[in-house]
Length: 108
Image 1 (tube, rainbow, N blue to C red):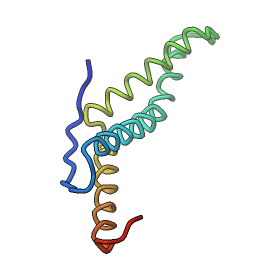
Image 2: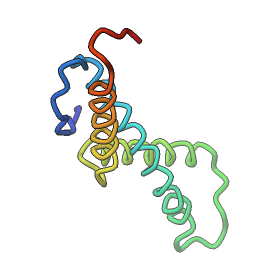
Image 3: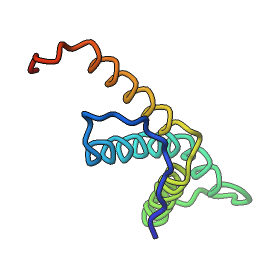
């Protein structure tokens, strides 16, 4: 099940829809990575709650890591903390400003 993030991207006539979609996806991945880093301490703390000895099961650590990654991605795609939305707005705004500064006949 894929959850779509409703990021309102200002209309930029010279930016194709495909590039806008890639920008949104990259911003969501960035936010998910940040969220994953925030969730990691909770992942490690959970295994020691109520346990006297440390569990060195690498398979359990790997599965827990995948779970944390999945949760972070789901939070980000569901709107997250607004980091992805802010990144998209800022980059789109900068792109619009760059487009307005360029003379119409200049190729870059």
